[in-house]
Image (tube, rainbow over all chains, first blue to last red; front, top):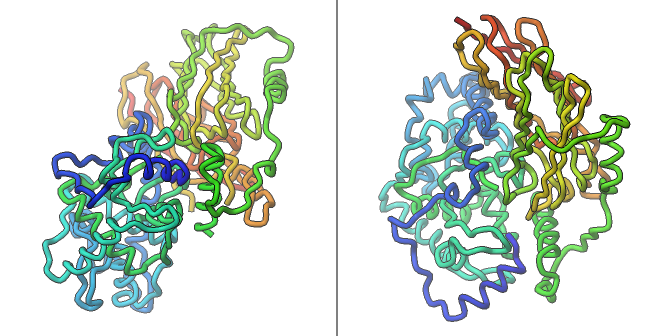
Length: 258
Length: 162
Length: 106
Protein backbone atom coordinates (compact mmCIF):
# COMPACT_ATOMS: atom_id res chain seq x y z
CA UNK A 1 0.00 0.00 0.00
CA UNK A 2 1.28 3.45 -0.88
CA UNK A 3 1.52 4.81 2.63
CA UNK A 4 2.59 8.35 1.81
CA UNK A 5 -0.31 9.00 -0.49
CA UNK A 6 -2.63 7.25 1.94
CA UNK A 7 -1.68 9.76 4.61
CA UNK A 8 -2.54 12.57 2.21
CA UNK A 9 -5.92 11.06 1.41
CA UNK A 10 -6.68 10.36 5.04
CA UNK A 11 -5.97 13.92 6.07
CA UNK A 12 -7.70 15.66 3.20
CA UNK A 13 -10.84 13.58 2.94
CA UNK A 14 -11.49 11.99 6.26
CA UNK A 15 -10.91 14.80 8.70
CA UNK A 16 -14.41 14.71 10.13
CA UNK A 17 -15.09 10.97 9.89
CA UNK A 18 -17.26 9.60 12.66
CA UNK A 19 -18.01 5.86 12.50
CA UNK A 20 -17.16 4.26 9.16
CA UNK A 21 -20.26 3.37 7.16
CA UNK A 22 -20.62 -0.27 6.12
CA UNK A 23 -21.06 -0.85 2.41
CA UNK A 24 -24.71 -1.70 1.66
CA UNK A 25 -24.98 -5.37 0.67
CA UNK A 26 -26.16 -4.52 -2.84
CA UNK A 27 -23.17 -2.21 -3.45
CA UNK A 28 -20.49 -4.75 -2.64
CA UNK A 29 -17.98 -5.42 -5.38
CA UNK A 30 -15.22 -7.95 -5.60
CA UNK A 31 -11.64 -6.83 -6.26
CA UNK A 32 -12.24 -8.44 -9.65
CA UNK A 33 -14.31 -5.42 -10.65
CA UNK A 34 -11.44 -3.04 -9.98
CA UNK A 35 -8.93 -4.89 -12.10
CA UNK A 36 -7.99 -4.29 -15.70
CA UNK A 37 -9.38 -6.44 -18.49
CA UNK A 38 -6.19 -8.48 -18.87
CA UNK A 39 -5.93 -9.37 -15.19
CA UNK A 40 -9.57 -10.43 -15.20
CA UNK A 41 -8.89 -12.60 -18.24
CA UNK A 42 -6.00 -14.20 -16.35
CA UNK A 43 -8.34 -15.17 -13.54
CA UNK A 44 -11.11 -16.41 -15.83
CA UNK A 45 -8.99 -18.75 -17.94
CA UNK A 46 -8.03 -21.89 -16.03
CA UNK A 47 -4.98 -22.39 -18.24
CA UNK A 48 -3.84 -18.79 -17.81
CA UNK A 49 -4.50 -18.59 -14.05
CA UNK A 50 -1.25 -19.42 -12.20
CA UNK A 51 -3.31 -20.18 -9.07
CA UNK A 52 -4.53 -23.30 -10.85
CA UNK A 53 -0.99 -24.70 -10.64
CA UNK A 54 -1.41 -24.75 -6.87
CA UNK A 55 -4.84 -26.33 -7.25
CA UNK A 56 -3.18 -29.06 -9.32
CA UNK A 57 -0.58 -29.57 -6.61
CA UNK A 58 -3.36 -29.69 -4.02
CA UNK A 59 -5.16 -32.36 -5.98
CA UNK A 60 -2.05 -34.53 -5.83
CA UNK A 61 -1.50 -33.84 -2.14
CA UNK A 62 -5.11 -34.75 -1.41
CA UNK A 63 -4.32 -38.29 -2.53
CA UNK A 64 -0.94 -38.59 -0.82
CA UNK A 65 -0.73 -40.82 2.25
CA UNK A 66 1.01 -39.18 5.17
CA UNK A 67 1.72 -39.41 8.87
CA UNK A 68 1.91 -42.33 11.29
CA UNK A 69 -1.66 -43.20 10.36
CA UNK A 70 -0.58 -43.62 6.74
CA UNK A 71 -3.74 -41.96 5.49
CA UNK A 72 -4.45 -39.48 2.74
CA UNK A 73 -7.18 -36.82 2.79
CA UNK A 74 -8.95 -38.97 0.20
CA UNK A 75 -8.98 -41.98 2.53
CA UNK A 76 -11.40 -40.19 4.87
CA UNK A 77 -12.97 -37.59 2.62
CA UNK A 78 -13.15 -39.43 -0.67
CA UNK A 79 -13.61 -37.31 -3.75
CA UNK A 80 -13.05 -33.69 -2.79
CA UNK A 81 -15.40 -32.50 -5.50
CA UNK A 82 -18.21 -33.98 -3.46
CA UNK A 83 -17.01 -33.91 0.14
CA UNK A 84 -15.43 -30.45 0.07
CA UNK A 85 -18.16 -28.74 -1.92
CA UNK A 86 -19.18 -25.60 -0.02
CA UNK A 87 -16.69 -26.11 2.80
CA UNK A 88 -14.36 -23.19 2.09
CA UNK A 89 -17.40 -20.94 1.65
CA UNK A 90 -18.20 -21.29 5.33
CA UNK A 91 -14.74 -20.83 6.77
CA UNK A 92 -13.56 -19.50 9.23
CA UNK A 93 -15.90 -21.62 11.36
CA UNK A 94 -16.24 -22.36 15.06
CA UNK A 95 -14.25 -25.34 16.25
CA UNK A 96 -15.45 -26.90 19.50
CA UNK A 97 -12.09 -28.47 20.34
CA UNK A 98 -10.37 -25.11 20.11
CA UNK A 99 -13.22 -23.15 21.61
CA UNK A 100 -12.90 -20.51 18.93
CA UNK A 101 -13.17 -20.07 15.16
CA UNK A 102 -10.40 -21.44 13.00
CA UNK A 103 -9.66 -20.83 9.35
CA UNK A 104 -9.33 -23.36 6.56
CA UNK A 105 -5.56 -23.68 6.85
CA UNK A 106 -5.86 -24.37 10.57
CA UNK A 107 -8.59 -26.92 9.88
CA UNK A 108 -6.35 -28.69 7.35
CA UNK A 109 -3.53 -28.79 9.88
CA UNK A 110 -5.89 -30.14 12.55
CA UNK A 111 -6.67 -33.02 10.23
CA UNK A 112 -2.98 -33.59 9.67
CA UNK A 113 -2.14 -33.75 13.38
CA UNK A 114 -5.31 -35.39 14.70
CA UNK A 115 -6.28 -37.75 11.88
CA UNK A 116 -3.14 -38.38 9.89
CA UNK A 117 -0.89 -38.26 12.96
CA UNK A 118 1.43 -36.08 10.96
CA UNK A 119 3.02 -32.69 11.50
CA UNK A 120 1.22 -29.46 10.71
CA UNK A 121 2.27 -27.75 7.48
CA UNK A 122 3.93 -24.35 8.02
CA UNK A 123 1.75 -21.35 7.24
CA UNK A 124 2.34 -20.01 3.72
CA UNK A 125 4.16 -23.21 2.76
CA UNK A 126 3.59 -24.38 -0.79
CA UNK A 127 1.83 -27.56 0.36
CA UNK A 128 -0.57 -25.88 2.77
CA UNK A 129 -1.45 -23.24 0.17
CA UNK A 130 -1.94 -25.95 -2.44
CA UNK A 131 -4.36 -27.87 -0.23
CA UNK A 132 -6.22 -24.69 0.74
CA UNK A 133 -6.43 -23.70 -2.93
CA UNK A 134 -7.69 -27.15 -3.91
CA UNK A 135 -10.33 -27.22 -1.18
CA UNK A 136 -11.21 -23.58 -1.87
CA UNK A 137 -11.65 -24.38 -5.54
CA UNK A 138 -14.42 -26.85 -4.64
CA UNK A 139 -16.49 -23.88 -3.49
CA UNK A 140 -15.83 -21.87 -6.66
CA UNK A 141 -18.90 -19.89 -7.67
CA UNK A 142 -20.77 -20.66 -4.46
CA UNK A 143 -21.91 -17.85 -2.19
CA UNK A 144 -19.79 -17.20 0.89
CA UNK A 145 -21.90 -18.50 3.75
CA UNK A 146 -20.46 -17.79 7.17
CA UNK A 147 -22.85 -19.42 9.64
CA UNK A 148 -24.93 -17.30 11.99
CA UNK A 149 -23.35 -18.92 15.01
CA UNK A 150 -23.81 -17.49 18.53
CA UNK A 151 -20.46 -18.96 19.52
CA UNK A 152 -18.57 -16.94 16.89
CA UNK A 153 -20.21 -13.61 17.77
CA UNK A 154 -17.50 -12.33 20.17
CA UNK A 155 -14.78 -13.20 17.66
CA UNK A 156 -16.71 -11.56 14.84
CA UNK A 157 -16.98 -8.44 17.01
CA UNK A 158 -13.26 -8.53 17.68
CA UNK A 159 -12.58 -8.77 13.96
CA UNK A 160 -14.93 -5.92 13.23
CA UNK A 161 -13.32 -3.81 15.93
CA UNK A 162 -9.94 -4.39 14.34
CA UNK A 163 -11.34 -3.39 10.94
CA UNK A 164 -12.79 -0.18 12.35
CA UNK A 165 -10.03 0.95 14.67
CA UNK A 166 -7.40 3.44 13.64
CA UNK A 167 -3.96 1.98 13.97
CA UNK A 168 -0.34 2.33 13.06
CA UNK A 169 1.85 5.31 12.35
CA UNK A 170 -0.60 6.55 9.75
CA UNK A 171 -3.49 6.24 12.19
CA UNK A 172 -5.71 4.72 9.55
CA UNK A 173 -8.39 2.09 9.85
CA UNK A 174 -9.19 -0.53 7.21
CA UNK A 175 -12.70 0.92 7.07
CA UNK A 176 -11.54 4.39 6.13
CA UNK A 177 -10.13 3.16 2.83
CA UNK A 178 -12.19 0.08 2.10
CA UNK A 179 -15.63 1.13 3.39
CA UNK A 180 -15.49 4.89 2.94
CA UNK A 181 -13.20 5.50 -0.03
CA UNK A 182 -13.39 2.40 -2.21
CA UNK A 183 -13.37 3.25 -5.88
CA UNK A 184 -11.27 6.36 -5.40
CA UNK A 185 -7.71 6.44 -6.64
CA UNK A 186 -4.72 6.06 -4.37
CA UNK A 187 -1.46 6.76 -6.15
CA UNK A 188 -3.00 5.87 -9.51
CA UNK A 189 -4.65 2.62 -8.47
CA UNK A 190 -8.31 2.24 -7.48
CA UNK A 191 -8.99 1.36 -3.83
CA UNK A 192 -10.96 -1.91 -3.77
CA UNK A 193 -13.48 -2.76 -1.09
CA UNK A 194 -11.24 -5.48 0.33
CA UNK A 195 -13.75 -8.31 -0.13
CA UNK A 196 -12.02 -11.61 0.68
CA UNK A 197 -13.72 -13.60 -2.05
CA UNK A 198 -10.87 -15.42 -3.75
CA UNK A 199 -8.30 -16.62 -1.24
CA UNK A 200 -5.82 -18.12 -1.44
CA UNK A 201 -5.05 -16.05 -4.49
CA UNK A 202 -2.26 -15.35 -6.98
CA UNK A 203 -1.03 -11.87 -6.37
CA UNK A 204 1.00 -10.43 -9.25
CA UNK A 205 2.98 -8.48 -6.68
CA UNK A 206 4.04 -11.74 -4.97
CA UNK A 207 4.41 -13.70 -8.22
CA UNK A 208 2.97 -16.52 -6.15
CA UNK A 209 -0.16 -17.77 -4.46
CA UNK A 210 -0.71 -16.50 -0.92
CA UNK A 211 -3.26 -16.52 1.86
CA UNK A 212 -5.57 -13.84 3.17
CA UNK A 213 -3.30 -13.54 6.20
CA UNK A 214 -0.36 -12.74 3.99
CA UNK A 215 -2.40 -10.03 2.30
CA UNK A 216 -3.48 -8.64 5.67
CA UNK A 217 0.12 -8.55 6.76
CA UNK A 218 0.94 -6.53 3.60
CA UNK A 219 -1.83 -4.07 4.54
CA UNK A 220 -0.67 -3.73 8.13
CA UNK A 221 2.93 -3.18 7.12
CA UNK A 222 1.78 -0.64 4.56
CA UNK A 223 -0.16 1.19 7.25
CA UNK A 224 2.86 1.01 9.53
CA UNK A 225 0.74 -0.88 12.04
CA UNK A 226 1.59 -3.90 14.12
CA UNK A 227 1.39 -7.13 12.18
CA UNK A 228 1.07 -10.61 13.69
CA UNK A 229 2.60 -14.02 13.19
CA UNK A 230 0.68 -16.25 10.82
CA UNK A 231 -2.02 -18.18 12.59
CA UNK A 232 -2.50 -15.52 15.26
CA UNK A 233 -6.05 -15.29 16.66
CA UNK A 234 -6.16 -11.62 15.67
CA UNK A 235 -5.80 -12.63 12.03
CA UNK A 236 -8.43 -15.34 12.27
CA UNK A 237 -10.88 -12.93 13.93
CA UNK A 238 -10.30 -10.44 11.13
CA UNK A 239 -10.61 -13.18 8.50
CA UNK A 240 -13.90 -14.21 10.06
CA UNK A 241 -15.16 -10.64 9.92
CA UNK A 242 -14.01 -10.18 6.33
CA UNK A 243 -15.66 -13.37 5.15
CA UNK A 244 -18.83 -12.42 7.00
CA UNK A 245 -18.63 -8.96 5.38
CA UNK A 246 -18.44 -10.71 1.98
CA UNK A 247 -21.34 -13.09 2.74
CA UNK A 248 -23.34 -13.98 -0.32
CA UNK A 249 -20.59 -12.98 -2.75
CA UNK A 250 -19.34 -15.84 -4.93
CA UNK A 251 -16.12 -17.63 -4.08
CA UNK A 252 -13.44 -16.93 -6.73
CA UNK A 253 -10.65 -19.15 -5.42
CA UNK A 254 -8.02 -19.09 -6.77
CA UNK A 255 -8.42 -15.42 -7.71
CA UNK A 256 -5.78 -13.26 -9.42
CA UNK A 257 -5.05 -9.77 -8.13
CA UNK A 258 -2.46 -7.10 -9.07
CA UNK B 1 11.59 -11.93 5.77
CA UNK B 2 8.28 -11.26 4.12
CA UNK B 3 7.91 -8.27 6.43
CA UNK B 4 11.20 -6.83 5.19
CA UNK B 5 10.22 -7.43 1.60
CA UNK B 6 6.93 -5.65 1.95
CA UNK B 7 8.57 -2.80 3.79
CA UNK B 8 11.25 -2.49 1.11
CA UNK B 9 8.59 -2.39 -1.53
CA UNK B 10 6.51 0.12 0.38
CA UNK B 11 9.56 2.29 0.81
CA UNK B 12 10.40 2.17 -2.86
CA UNK B 13 6.86 3.04 -3.89
CA UNK B 14 6.68 5.98 -1.56
CA UNK B 15 9.98 7.20 -2.91
CA UNK B 16 8.62 7.01 -6.42
CA UNK B 17 5.38 8.78 -5.60
CA UNK B 18 6.00 11.69 -3.30
CA UNK B 19 9.20 12.15 -1.38
CA UNK B 20 7.82 15.19 0.45
CA UNK B 21 5.17 13.14 2.21
CA UNK B 22 7.83 10.89 3.67
CA UNK B 23 9.15 13.53 6.05
CA UNK B 24 9.07 12.05 9.50
CA UNK B 25 7.94 8.59 8.45
CA UNK B 26 10.26 5.81 9.54
CA UNK B 27 11.78 3.87 6.72
CA UNK B 28 14.49 1.43 5.84
CA UNK B 29 17.52 2.96 4.21
CA UNK B 30 16.97 1.60 0.73
CA UNK B 31 19.42 2.96 -1.76
CA UNK B 32 17.88 3.12 -5.19
CA UNK B 33 21.34 3.48 -6.65
CA UNK B 34 22.16 -0.16 -5.87
CA UNK B 35 21.05 -2.94 -8.15
CA UNK B 36 22.01 -4.09 -11.62
CA UNK B 37 22.90 -1.79 -14.44
CA UNK B 38 19.80 -1.12 -16.48
CA UNK B 39 19.46 -1.81 -20.11
CA UNK B 40 19.66 1.39 -22.09
CA UNK B 41 18.37 2.31 -25.49
CA UNK B 42 21.94 1.61 -26.66
CA UNK B 43 22.08 -1.92 -25.27
CA UNK B 44 18.67 -2.58 -26.74
CA UNK B 45 19.92 -1.45 -30.15
CA UNK B 46 22.89 -3.81 -29.78
CA UNK B 47 20.58 -6.68 -28.95
CA UNK B 48 18.46 -5.85 -31.98
CA UNK B 49 21.51 -5.64 -34.20
CA UNK B 50 22.49 -9.16 -33.12
CA UNK B 51 19.24 -10.39 -34.62
CA UNK B 52 18.94 -8.12 -37.61
CA UNK B 53 22.55 -7.59 -38.62
CA UNK B 54 22.90 -4.69 -41.04
CA UNK B 55 19.50 -5.24 -42.68
CA UNK B 56 17.02 -2.41 -42.61
CA UNK B 57 13.94 -2.78 -40.45
CA UNK B 58 10.67 -1.42 -41.75
CA UNK B 59 7.82 -0.36 -39.52
CA UNK B 60 4.64 -2.32 -40.09
CA UNK B 61 3.06 -5.76 -40.50
CA UNK B 62 3.56 -6.33 -36.80
CA UNK B 63 1.42 -5.34 -33.86
CA UNK B 64 2.27 -5.36 -30.16
CA UNK B 65 -0.64 -5.57 -27.75
CA UNK B 66 0.04 -4.42 -24.21
CA UNK B 67 -2.50 -3.10 -21.70
CA UNK B 68 -2.75 0.70 -21.75
CA UNK B 69 -2.63 0.82 -17.97
CA UNK B 70 -0.28 -1.68 -16.38
CA UNK B 71 -1.40 -2.58 -12.88
CA UNK B 72 1.67 -4.52 -11.96
CA UNK B 73 4.92 -4.75 -13.88
CA UNK B 74 5.52 -8.32 -12.66
CA UNK B 75 3.09 -9.92 -15.09
CA UNK B 76 2.02 -7.92 -18.11
CA UNK B 77 -0.04 -9.62 -20.82
CA UNK B 78 1.75 -9.34 -24.17
CA UNK B 79 0.39 -10.41 -27.53
CA UNK B 80 2.29 -9.99 -30.78
CA UNK B 81 0.59 -10.48 -34.13
CA UNK B 82 2.20 -10.39 -37.59
CA UNK B 83 0.42 -10.01 -40.90
CA UNK B 84 1.41 -12.92 -43.10
CA UNK B 85 -0.30 -15.59 -45.21
CA UNK B 86 1.95 -18.12 -43.41
CA UNK B 87 2.46 -20.20 -46.53
CA UNK B 88 5.62 -22.15 -47.29
CA UNK B 89 6.78 -19.33 -49.57
CA UNK B 90 5.68 -16.45 -47.45
CA UNK B 91 5.69 -16.71 -43.69
CA UNK B 92 7.07 -15.31 -40.47
CA UNK B 93 10.19 -17.16 -39.41
CA UNK B 94 10.74 -15.52 -36.07
CA UNK B 95 9.54 -12.73 -33.79
CA UNK B 96 11.83 -11.07 -31.24
CA UNK B 97 10.75 -8.76 -28.44
CA UNK B 98 12.95 -6.20 -26.70
CA UNK B 99 12.64 -3.60 -23.96
CA UNK B 100 14.49 -0.39 -23.44
CA UNK B 101 14.82 -0.18 -19.65
CA UNK B 102 14.64 -3.66 -18.18
CA UNK B 103 17.96 -4.84 -16.72
CA UNK B 104 18.36 -6.89 -19.88
CA UNK B 105 16.99 -5.95 -23.33
CA UNK B 106 15.77 -9.36 -24.60
CA UNK B 107 12.32 -10.55 -23.64
CA UNK B 108 11.47 -13.52 -25.86
CA UNK B 109 12.28 -14.91 -29.28
CA UNK B 110 9.84 -17.26 -30.98
CA UNK B 111 10.39 -19.41 -34.07
CA UNK B 112 7.37 -19.89 -36.29
CA UNK B 113 6.84 -21.38 -39.72
CA UNK B 114 4.14 -22.31 -42.23
CA UNK B 115 2.66 -24.85 -39.80
CA UNK B 116 1.67 -22.07 -37.43
CA UNK B 117 -1.33 -21.06 -39.50
CA UNK B 118 -1.35 -17.74 -37.71
CA UNK B 119 1.61 -15.59 -36.70
CA UNK B 120 0.51 -14.71 -33.22
CA UNK B 121 1.64 -15.55 -29.72
CA UNK B 122 0.93 -14.38 -26.19
CA UNK B 123 2.86 -14.46 -22.98
CA UNK B 124 3.30 -12.48 -19.78
CA UNK B 125 6.34 -10.31 -19.28
CA UNK B 126 8.05 -8.24 -16.64
CA UNK B 127 8.43 -4.53 -17.17
CA UNK B 128 10.71 -2.74 -14.76
CA UNK B 129 9.59 0.76 -15.58
CA UNK B 130 7.62 2.88 -17.99
CA UNK B 131 9.44 2.34 -21.29
CA UNK B 132 9.45 1.32 -24.92
CA UNK B 133 8.78 -2.24 -26.03
CA UNK B 134 9.89 -3.22 -29.53
CA UNK B 135 9.03 -6.32 -31.56
CA UNK B 136 10.84 -7.38 -34.73
CA UNK B 137 9.56 -9.98 -37.17
CA UNK B 138 11.87 -11.86 -39.50
CA UNK B 139 10.13 -12.95 -42.71
CA UNK B 140 10.94 -15.91 -44.91
CA UNK B 141 12.05 -13.51 -47.66
CA UNK B 142 14.71 -12.11 -45.34
CA UNK B 143 12.93 -8.82 -44.62
CA UNK B 144 12.51 -7.39 -41.12
CA UNK B 145 9.45 -5.57 -39.83
CA UNK B 146 8.85 -3.90 -36.50
CA UNK B 147 6.38 -2.34 -34.12
CA UNK B 148 7.07 -0.18 -31.12
CA UNK B 149 4.92 0.79 -28.17
CA UNK B 150 5.40 3.08 -25.18
CA UNK B 151 3.92 1.86 -21.88
CA UNK B 152 3.38 3.29 -18.42
CA UNK B 153 4.09 1.05 -15.45
CA UNK B 154 3.01 2.14 -12.02
CA UNK B 155 4.85 -0.53 -10.08
CA UNK B 156 8.33 -1.78 -10.90
CA UNK B 157 8.89 -5.51 -11.46
CA UNK B 158 12.48 -6.73 -11.67
CA UNK B 159 14.06 -4.11 -9.44
CA UNK B 160 12.37 -4.90 -6.12
CA UNK B 161 14.29 -6.31 -3.19
CA UNK B 162 13.68 -9.70 -1.60
CA UNK C 1 7.65 -30.63 -8.71
CA UNK C 2 7.03 -28.64 -11.86
CA UNK C 3 3.38 -28.65 -12.77
CA UNK C 4 2.03 -27.58 -16.09
CA UNK C 5 -1.38 -26.82 -17.51
CA UNK C 6 -2.00 -27.35 -21.19
CA UNK C 7 -5.01 -26.38 -23.24
CA UNK C 8 -5.32 -28.09 -26.61
CA UNK C 9 -8.68 -28.69 -28.24
CA UNK C 10 -9.48 -32.40 -28.00
CA UNK C 11 -10.93 -32.35 -31.50
CA UNK C 12 -10.35 -30.21 -34.57
CA UNK C 13 -11.17 -30.20 -38.27
CA UNK C 14 -8.35 -30.87 -40.70
CA UNK C 15 -6.79 -27.59 -41.71
CA UNK C 16 -8.28 -25.68 -38.79
CA UNK C 17 -5.96 -23.23 -37.03
CA UNK C 18 -6.04 -24.07 -33.34
CA UNK C 19 -4.74 -22.18 -30.33
CA UNK C 20 -2.53 -23.94 -27.82
CA UNK C 21 -2.11 -22.53 -24.31
CA UNK C 22 0.56 -23.56 -21.86
CA UNK C 23 1.36 -22.62 -18.27
CA UNK C 24 4.17 -24.05 -16.18
CA UNK C 25 5.14 -23.44 -12.56
CA UNK C 26 8.57 -21.84 -12.29
CA UNK C 27 9.87 -18.87 -10.30
CA UNK C 28 11.88 -17.45 -13.20
CA UNK C 29 14.44 -15.96 -10.84
CA UNK C 30 15.86 -13.11 -12.91
CA UNK C 31 19.36 -12.90 -11.50
CA UNK C 32 18.83 -9.20 -10.84
CA UNK C 33 16.92 -9.38 -7.59
CA UNK C 34 19.03 -8.57 -4.50
CA UNK C 35 18.76 -10.79 -1.44
CA UNK C 36 18.80 -9.60 2.19
CA UNK C 37 22.49 -8.83 2.02
CA UNK C 38 22.25 -6.96 -1.27
CA UNK C 39 23.80 -9.71 -3.37
CA UNK C 40 21.84 -10.69 -6.47
CA UNK C 41 20.03 -14.01 -6.19
CA UNK C 42 21.50 -16.16 -9.00
CA UNK C 43 19.53 -16.47 -12.22
CA UNK C 44 17.33 -19.55 -12.49
CA UNK C 45 14.97 -19.44 -15.43
CA UNK C 46 13.41 -21.56 -18.11
CA UNK C 47 15.38 -20.73 -21.24
CA UNK C 48 13.67 -22.77 -23.92
CA UNK C 49 10.26 -24.12 -24.84
CA UNK C 50 9.62 -26.46 -27.78
CA UNK C 51 6.38 -27.90 -29.08
CA UNK C 52 6.34 -30.89 -31.44
CA UNK C 53 3.34 -32.21 -33.31
CA UNK C 54 3.75 -35.92 -34.06
CA UNK C 55 7.48 -35.44 -33.74
CA UNK C 56 7.77 -32.36 -35.93
CA UNK C 57 8.70 -29.06 -34.32
CA UNK C 58 5.94 -26.49 -34.79
CA UNK C 59 6.88 -23.83 -32.26
CA UNK C 60 9.98 -22.83 -30.34
CA UNK C 61 10.62 -20.01 -27.91
CA UNK C 62 13.73 -18.70 -26.25
CA UNK C 63 12.85 -17.19 -22.87
CA UNK C 64 14.75 -14.48 -21.02
CA UNK C 65 14.49 -13.20 -17.42
CA UNK C 66 11.84 -10.71 -18.58
CA UNK C 67 9.33 -13.54 -18.85
CA UNK C 68 7.09 -13.52 -15.78
CA UNK C 69 7.12 -16.21 -13.12
CA UNK C 70 5.01 -19.25 -14.03
CA UNK C 71 5.54 -18.73 -17.75
CA UNK C 72 2.39 -18.57 -19.84
CA UNK C 73 2.70 -19.09 -23.59
CA UNK C 74 0.03 -19.36 -26.25
CA UNK C 75 0.55 -19.98 -29.95
CA UNK C 76 -1.19 -21.42 -32.99
CA UNK C 77 -0.82 -24.39 -35.26
CA UNK C 78 -2.71 -25.99 -38.12
CA UNK C 79 -4.51 -29.18 -37.12
CA UNK C 80 -3.04 -31.49 -39.75
CA UNK C 81 -3.66 -35.00 -38.39
CA UNK C 82 -4.62 -36.85 -35.25
CA UNK C 83 -1.81 -37.50 -32.86
CA UNK C 84 0.19 -36.14 -30.00
CA UNK C 85 1.55 -32.76 -29.16
CA UNK C 86 4.67 -32.78 -27.01
CA UNK C 87 5.80 -29.88 -24.91
CA UNK C 88 9.29 -29.51 -23.48
CA UNK C 89 10.70 -26.87 -21.20
CA UNK C 90 14.40 -26.66 -20.39
CA UNK C 91 16.33 -24.17 -18.34
CA UNK C 92 19.08 -23.24 -15.90
CA UNK C 93 20.41 -25.74 -13.38
CA UNK C 94 19.34 -28.66 -15.54
CA UNK C 95 15.66 -27.81 -15.41
CA UNK C 96 13.60 -30.06 -17.62
CA UNK C 97 9.87 -30.70 -17.84
CA UNK C 98 7.62 -32.26 -20.43
CA UNK C 99 3.93 -32.72 -21.07
CA UNK C 100 1.85 -34.09 -23.88
CA UNK C 101 -1.67 -33.83 -25.17
CA UNK C 102 -3.60 -35.79 -27.76
CA UNK C 103 -5.69 -34.37 -30.53
CA UNK C 104 -8.23 -35.99 -32.84
CA UNK C 105 -8.37 -34.40 -36.27
CA UNK C 106 -11.23 -35.34 -38.54
